[in-house]
Image (cartoon, rainbow, N blue to C red):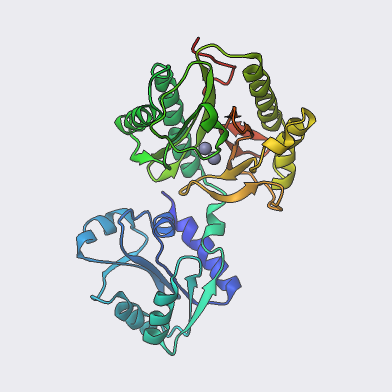
Length: 358
Ligand code: ZN
Ligand code: ZN
């Protein structure tokens, strides 16, 4: 992993923000900038170098994973060590991740580190994470492949009488056996009327013949997320099932064919929304078209009516329109795509043609 490039980019942003030092304590950002996967510690950037402060449990793992950092076993109170290093470097202003530090921590750090001024930094280092590098895209591609394999596997189990929880457990076990460290979120298996709930986490309901079942899940692989949704009918479908499914599929494919760099999140969202609205189902599509994925399952940019974000090469986003009819059921189809110089590359490849178990 090339953390050197990430460190250089962070330092450039720190300079723009007018801070000569920064403390990064949140797990995902710590991992992104250093490669260190331990669950405790912090990164400290000073004008003279960068430090990974952690405890004795990680004194073998940390230097191996984070060769660009000086690994320091911190004092029982980590802030005592931070204070020492800042004093050595003559630092007066210390940036911190404003979205990840609790009020209690901020208060105690301010007191401990005075007279060093704590400077809240918004969106740092998250803004560096928005465009993925080749290493990251390669890992997300693997995470997407794992989700595809899990979907192919679960189709053998989807039949009337099986519970949603059985299917969720089977999906998650399959992903783990094939290299995932876990699911990226609580697996959604939503059947019948429950498929009209966009976030219908699997429950004890048994699948009935003649209804939709939506699977929405992802594999966490080497720290990165995939996110896949497919909807099928168990048993015999009706014309209504076919009609609604066909509209969502048309909307999703229309977006995949037209999303390109330079577009805003709002324009990308309109690609699916306009198709669904044209068929009169606009009011049944209540969420955004997609979201960024990476180390976290929901990242920037958003593809939604409220998003001014401009799509750039290297961003990885989901495209997931849906139609949800209360009391009947719903359909959502979701793929993961990377924005390229000229358009997109679709990372997930599970079949999307209308499918009923019969
Ligand atoms: Zn999803
Ligand atoms: Zn999603």
